[in-house]
Amino acid sequence: MLAELPIVEHPDLLVGRCNADDAGVVRIRDDLAVIQTLDFFTPIVDDPRTFGRIAAANSLSDVYAMGGAPLTAMNIVCFPRKKLPLDVLRDVLLGGHEVVEQAGALLVGGHSVEDPELKYGLSVTGIIHPDRVITNAGARPGDRLLLTKPLGTGVLATAIKGGMAPRDVEAEAVRWMITLNKDAAEVMQEVGVNACTDITGFGLLGHALEMACASGVTLRIDASRVPLISGVKDLASMGMIPAGSFANRKFCERAVTVEDKVDPLLVDLFADAQTSGGLLISVAEANAANLHEALERRRVSHHEIGRVVDGSPGRILVGP
Amino acid sequence: MKELKTVDCRGLTCPQPVIRTKNALQSATTPIRVIVDNEASCTNVRRFAESQGARVQVAEQTGEFHLTIDPRQYEPSAEEPPMVCSTTAARNLVVYVSSEGMGRGDDELGAVLMEAFLDTLSQFKGDLSHAIFVNAGAKLAVEGSPVLEQIRQLEQLGVQVLVCGTCLNHFGIRDKLAVGSVSNMYAIIETLSKAERIIKP
Image 1 (spheres, rainbow over the protein chains, first blue to last red):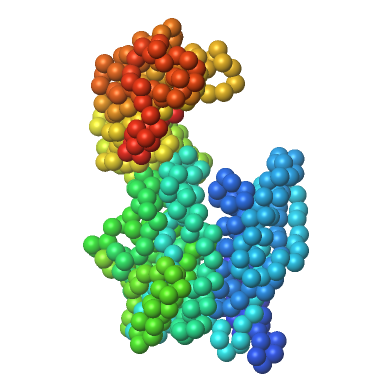
Image 2 (image 1 turned 30 degrees about the vertical axis):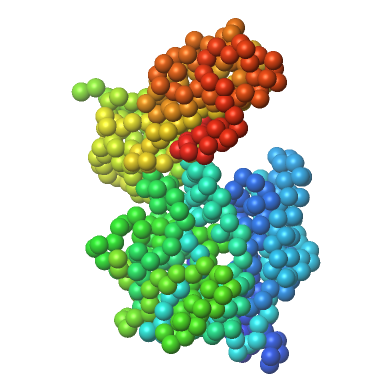
């Protein structure tokens, strides 16, 4: 649909819409660029404060995925004043504020409208040196692929709606969703990587495919090495895969080759729409050990899930 | 041929079709039919039914999917939520009773519900290991309790009945204990921590 809108071009526009990247980046000085992004959505957990935290971590993530640091944030609120007490709004905003503070950014205002359904998120402005912007377009054959958070939040949200989510599974997923990608972003800048994107609504497959297209490469994912939130596979096998995740898989199908030995359930989970997911990082093979070590030192969870291989541009291979 | 019981899930999005199928299967003894209008729901319902040990056949008709689900091997899990697939169905259920009645709102109704709860529990005898009574729940295990028979029945089925000693002392009814054994916090926590599932009325 976005293809029907006019393309915006400018010498200082370093990252625009054309490669389906995470945020826009504009150079404002030779040594400074501004990153802009926004995201908001409906609650995926019942607790308002937790929802606020998750939404904020999710909104900030796009800045981290570009390798930047968030500077300011503004609240975006849709609130059904007649249906919900204002306490709920306060708790959502408190949760958001907490996470923005943890990110070291300033919450400087916002805007709210009345709406039949609660929605919350942030508009975030970040900064970065123009030469250090990490896009999804730099992956090269031979690169290793690392993922910093396990998958499964879409399945979990569906199970919560159906009253079928075990508490411990929900608690683990919440822990991941409120974890900022801040440390991972700082490590990427410290070590140097070729490409990065964060895993959100299009799932691992969708965002990996965007990377493969933007970089003109084929990504190979080893199914057994992709981390999953514990308990989520059981829920998926009980029919808790959201329609959006099926749509992701359908959309990617033409560009994804799945080897016979791979459990189809795993492929569905790789297409699962994520909220506040981890970073998918493409790092040169020679630098992979450094990245592992630096992530380890900062206690950032990470798994090597595959590599960039020679092959046609814009394709994904899923092996066992 | 007799018309199959049909669950019409057209127009519903996940997880609703799965929830409705689950509810229908709980009371079904013969095959049921589930109709969905998208592939996502079809896959989800099929996976759910198969995870519960049922047999599933799918027929696609002009954008609709008709699933025939034979529940003969289907065994509803004893408790929900949370729910896991049948391979890990609970075998070590612990019942934790911390009040005289079941739920809050009306004490008279609470007493009726508690009686029904304890009555029905005996149907899950294979899965129950312990029943723990604490706070006002301890009053249920003494002489004159309206549910003494139900608790005795559980005990006869092999369920270990633990009654909080501190609670019995607090209410001054320790000498009136009529079923189960006096227990302590250590044993209670140990039992709860080993339970696969805990049910609280």
